[in-house]
Structure formats: C-alpha cells, structure tokens
Length: 100
Image (cartoon, rainbow, N blue to C red):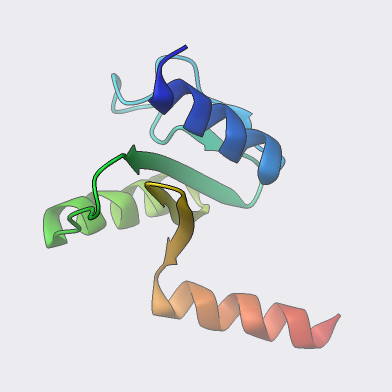
C-alpha cells in the first residue's frame, strides 16, 4: 500500500471521517476525507520539510467554502503529524469548546 493511502486511511480513522473516492481528481468532490464538520486534505513526506504556499492554502480555503466545512490540512513530516487550520476557524473551534 502506498504511503499516501496509509496517511489518508490514518486520518479518516483518527478524525472519524470518510475517505473520498478519487480524491483530488474532481473539482466537485474536494479533499481526501470529510464528515459533517470537517474537510481534510492529507499530505505526507519522508523528507525533513514540507512546503506550504499561498496557492495550496487558497485552494484548501475555497474547498472549505464550497463544501460548507472547516478545512484542515493534515501533514505528516517523516514521523511528525501536524494539523494546519486557519486562524478564523481555530477561533471558532475554541469558542465552541468553551460553550460545551
């Protein structure tokens, strides 16, 4: 099994999302996995770094708007797992947490 498939499966299980069939190959079904709240784009590298650029982040943001979901970028750099979330979305998550 390819490393990127393992990463997508890991993220889907970890965040209780469903993998999207054919993820990344159609504009109408963005992301690698999603549930009713989140749209997750999974990326992984065996290198010591992963490059984020404005184009990647703009695309993720637009996909979140298109699907009415909070976009999350799940990145694995070697053996380190990170979640990248936009500041506005993170603030909303914190507000919801304090309301509970």
